[in-house]
Image (cartoon, rainbow, N blue to C red; front, side, top):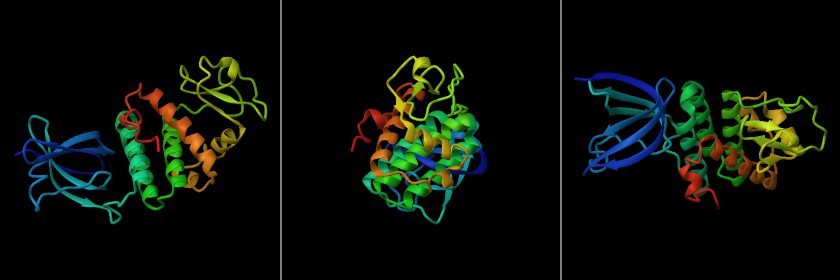
Length: 246
């Protein structure tokens, strides 16, 4: 008999295994990414089958070989989510990004991921989906120490002018002035800089209350997706598949 334990988690992936079983990927505040088998997860009407993006408390058994088996799950009241295609695309992006980058601060990433999914569920507009994605990446960057001061260049210490463009440095993983940036491909304008400056001291939920018009939100989403591709060394399948193109 293996060791039994329970953990809060988000379901960040699901796939079939064998003839009738399934495997779910969980992101847990205590253990980061976990994979657990759900026996008879596809064929039995009595099997526990937590849907993708579900948030809740999961009961697991760990065998001597280190394998996990799901024995029970208690989902939060809002789950399962009934997402539109736009919400599914945004949720797929943030859960994949959490899996790839969140284990260095699994507790903070779990709180952020749970908040982001609940925020997506509360509003199916494209503007909300964009702002959730923008702030998810921005908050991850803050937690990782990649957010430099937005009033002066972190390389040359020069104070930015009011109308200056800031460029993302792929060496620093943060924004800097044009002269110090080794790559000019990713940049933000004065309006975006003001938005990030305002939200830099806010938590995720508070930052979401700061409005962005649709055009600005879509441009900033593109910027943050490109930064995420860099931070994950191009491993984001949600980006490579074109899921976010619509």
